[in-house]
Image 1: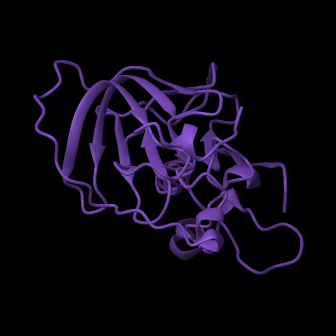
Image 2: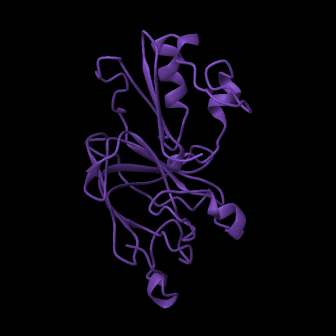
Image 3: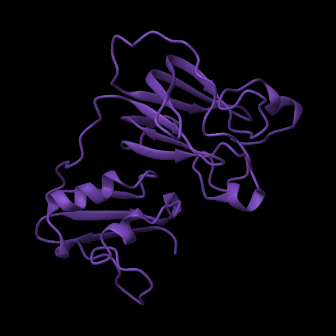
Length: 212
């Protein structure tokens, strides 16, 4: 499956981007009547749920592969009150914030590669599974003061052959929900080789990481 699918009901329009999907399977496990697994043909049925129920499905999609809006194009999903990135065990960085990625507005949710092997960089494509990538989801806590502002636009610049440069209010959270650090400017590893994950330590130069 590739590309985008757009399906509408009287209450809600659903957009599914297969290239962003990391197969967390929250959609088919939570609402198999809306996202019907293992069928031929049409598999997205927003008519089986209310707009609020579809919005809940979208909120549970960490990659942003599922987006929803009103049939007239008006927004349903609102920006979070606190910008977060969850560090996934042996997996990607899961952002929840008003995102600008590589200079373009990119919704409120995205899972970005940190193993270095994704074919759809900066997004995760599950290559960390096949490559055997190992990186803790429980990094050490770095003492930090509460941010004066916890929301607002988060700008992510995937630097040429280098890390993710992230500017804006952001709270880094472990897989178990522990606050790791609060920042407004941070460089996050995406080559997979840093000795100080999730942060960049310059290892991309040593290992010849290549990515636009």
